[in-house]
Image 1 (cartoon, rainbow, N blue to C red):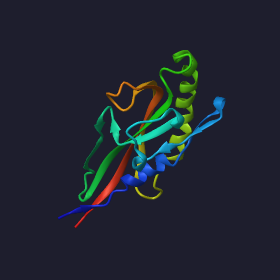
Image 2 (cartoon, rainbow, N blue to C red):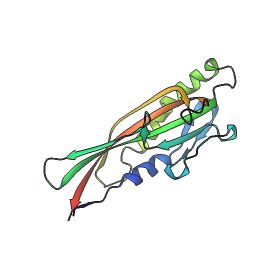
Image 3 (cartoon, helix red, strand yellow):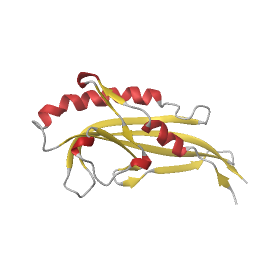
Length: 162
């Protein structure tokens, strides 16, 4: 029986450990990692980032042989959801559009910090995106937030052992 040792949990922890700073509001927004997931978010918790192994309600990971056994390429996606403000607060989109756009730009700093999330582990950043949008959290709850969904994709080279 072959075994694989992946560093996927370290990838998620590295992203969760980062903060994203919105300069115009002087807000440094931290994250709740995989172990900090919550069923609901209170107004006092906002703004907050939620690190999830999901993208569009489905878990996203895949892998394939790298050409030479026993090396495999595992592809991981870290979804980082910003809940910035309740949709029924303030002046609406007019109030939050510029700050959410600034957040998406500031997210590039986080990406630069985690381009090699586990140094020397054969993990590389493949792609990233960050899109401001309206987010229902949790899904089906009717609770809407102004926020952003950012996704960072990594490739990890892993070796089968045994």
